[in-house]
Image (cartoon, rainbow, N blue to C red):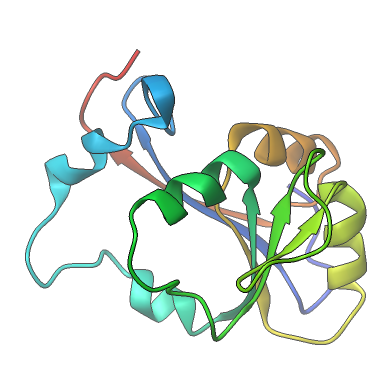
Amino acid sequence: MSKETSARLCILYIAMSLDGYIAGKDDNLDFLSKVELAGEDYGYTAFQHQVDTLIWGRRTYDKVLSFGGDFHHRDKKCYVISTTRTGSDENVEFVADPVELVRSLKASPGKHIYCDGGGGVVAALLSAKLIDRLIISVIPHLVG
């Protein structure tokens, strides 16, 4: 993790299976429901008040859209990392390079930056030492 030289942190906030997967085959997330409890959000709401920017990989974004319903992050600036899509849609702006994006965001004022996957985005940001804090919930289930 990088030193916290900026007031604006990039925080990875994800859940993974006991064997290290953040999704199963075909981006299946059913294993996450194994720990769902009515009225319990495991700190997610409080965390959301600390961030004003969200970064997703394209497959993560597509998965969120597949759930239907309203887009839940309209109060944040949302970026999707994609090498195949450009521009923006009604919810997000598409950007090709997560490293340059996070460097730029950290140099601007704002609340913290929430990174929520996917694996390629996380790997690129970890390699560049741009993730300042890891919040990882481990779900007691084997996916692989």
